[in-house]
Image (cartoon, rainbow, N blue to C red; front, top):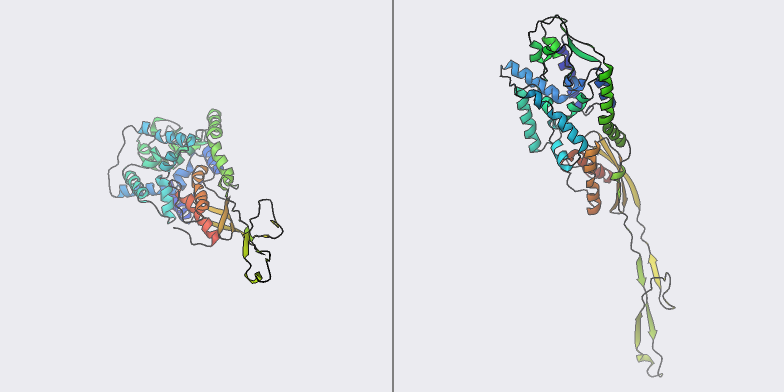
Length: 397
């Protein structure tokens, strides 16, 4: 069976798993394993947005539409690595706003029947139109996830290799969706190679192009150094996501004001005579307790402190965030929300640190009817809906 027939079947499976919420992206451990064996195979075989772009290439060929070759391709391909480095070292709100427009992530949300903003829908459509005329346009120039996986795969064990049986027909160059010139090198060391094996299927000479081991200690060492330097923040994100997020624990303690009952002393004036006793004036004396008195102000004044008995409840609720389920604990005294604590979540740390601001808003306003955080919409919505779930309120869409 040709790889061009097997790969679409696997892609369809992962598209279905993504639509069902059973697959988002590979965990960091799998990324490293794939990177050291075959490179960014996720991009070539498992990415739903990559599959959609491949489907558009198939449609273009069926409709005999023109293929656009961008001038400066070999310079533009570095753009995604620049974007990756920027996002790695800069977590500003502007960068997060830009990342929230990522068509790969938004297509995943679309598959899971989640709401897309008009702007995100327009951007997604524009990239799909670009992919219709240029193979994997987004993957080649702008995909940060692809850059992350490519940048650690320089020491991959298996690589595309061309032998002397090659007739230099250049069909492999035309078949490569990432624009790699395979005929100009005996071994493809390009980090952009996604292991799709389209070049092998396109070759008219069987065995002229193969994926074989091409081990190099030097390249392996460089990959390990890059993994340590660039992937450790991702490992920390995974560790943080498995723990309770302390930064999301905002508590407000409501103090109950004691109820103070002041009694009034009724003192009759001294009797002047027996005839005036029936008209004796009555003096009303109000006594106010001092701060230090707890039971009596004086012999004739009384202070009673009554603390209302209000039950404190500890509630739990869950809702879906961007990458998985978010679970929160809500402490509630009467009608007052005392605190909201995130117990578990799987969100990316840089997004989640933006999203947790809704917790303070809910506590300040004593309401769950707050706006989501622009740039971290799905994570903040998950926090809000988890809080609503704990309180028995309907979720927002």
